[in-house]
Image (tube, rainbow, N blue to C red; front, side, top):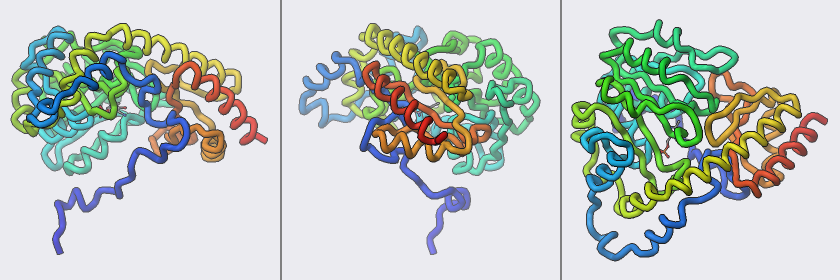
Amino acid sequence: MLKPRPSIVNLGPYHSPIVSRSGLSLDLNESMAGCSPRVLARLRLLSAADLSLYPEREIGERQIANFLGIAPEQVLVTNGMDEALSLLFTAYLDPGDELLFADPTFVMYPMLGEALAANVVRVRSGEDLVLPVSDLLAHISPHTRVIAIANPNNPTGLAATRADLLKIAEAAPDAAVLVDEAYFEFGGESLITDLARHPNLFVARTFSKAYGLAGLRLGVLTGAAAQIDYLRRLSLPFNVNSVVLACLEEALADQPFVREHAAQIKQGREQLTQLFAELRLRFWPSQTNFVLVRIGPLAKAFMESMRRRGILVRDSSANPGCEGCVRVTVGTPSQMEGALRAIREAIAETRR
Ligand code: PMP
């Protein structure tokens, strides 16, 4: 019988990240504020040729390079950041090579590493869930080929310092060190300006969060020109669609929209953390558009109670160190009113 490679046969079954779309989705860290009206206006002007011709991603790469203040040769646009991760891991990980990261973190890292038959080396954060920098440094070996760090991190919302991340990049000159800045616009320090001095450093960004374009799928991988050149050879030439490329200029130009959205997110996460403190729940101070909170053994009942109130939140219990934890995406100010009320009621109900 036909069988794929053993690493593929051994992968766990696929489950869509989307559990349901009935109710308010505070489970996927999408933007609940939508996208810039300037992007929508550009979309409405799309012509037939915009759709019938193959996309020219190089135009988008120049726009992004210009925005980030780096050279176009340092930029590869991708079909969401997920594709950037897949390309990067595929380019540097042979079977048996080490992929190093600290738990808890973004679940795609181990999934991709396992698909490539890499040796997945997981270091465990302490109870504070802070990036265990010295432990990561201690686990760098001659076999370490990729180190992946989400900064700020998902699902904790915590950010590491730029100095600590650079320490890791410098300690592993023969490994690709990826700093995943998916939530950069909501807090934390960027390492984009450090690319020039660190030839093994990669920084990835996405338009799925602060720009509110998750459905259009646009990610960005940046790094040393020599390394991005290899990744460009591996990537499919038409990986990014012409619709998102047509909208990119407007998306980048509307920084007031991004700033205003980020300010609302900060307010919303303040409200969430105040409520969690009041309810005497353990939470982690977030620099992202979500907050991780420990509900405890009643987490499932809490989520079910939230669902009955029309709100979906994310079960993070499967992430090492996050047992009994739930991740709540920050919604718009008006959604937050309902969400805060629902959380209060659901906690009261589960504690009864
Ligand atoms: N990295 C992190 C840390 C994320 O949380 C996400 C989205 N959940 C991604 C990357 C991927 O984002 P996208 O593929 O939508 O660009």
